[in-house]
Length: 231
Image 1 (cartoon, one colour):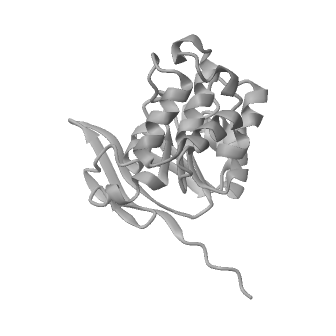
Image 2 (cartoon, rainbow, N blue to C red; image 1 turned 30 degrees about the vertical axis):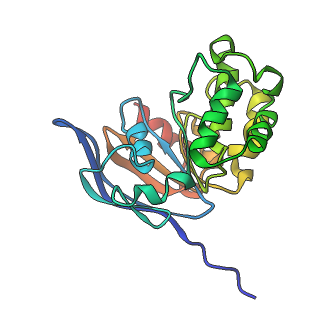
């Protein structure tokens, strides 16, 4: 029996987003199939985080069309919110709450039970300290809680902004089954790590000043093309 055809997870055509007169994104067009990974490279201010926020339905595009998991944004953002997991540069957690309280709060938003909360706390090895206020945990531990929050509702699409920031090698290995290639999820990753990011990518998008400077299959990209974006 022939393999089932991959379905489109992202379809972006002519995306533009601006802040006042400053163009944050211009002329972004690409497609990504379910289960594949897009890695976005570019210097600070290139538009990487803006792209993630548009895909998460947090920012409205000012031009172009954006389809995420078959839903048109922003009109149908409601249809994909429970199917997308966002790991932002900021952890989107409450510092005065414990790790467990943070996850239970987000669980209620998604109709997820406490059993799943304990499952993801265990997966990121925070169970033993799950009752401590987040402000008392190290930055690496907070990042692991943020990973747990992003996958709590078992999303189909992960939007990951520097997901391995503040994590030591053991922690990177720990979160791999949740947000790595082995998770089986469609992923969009913003990265400054040419070697590591390229190893995870099916498609590479390079941004410079909000414009696409590189868009290729990862197998056709040389790491020097990525480092060239930062010069």
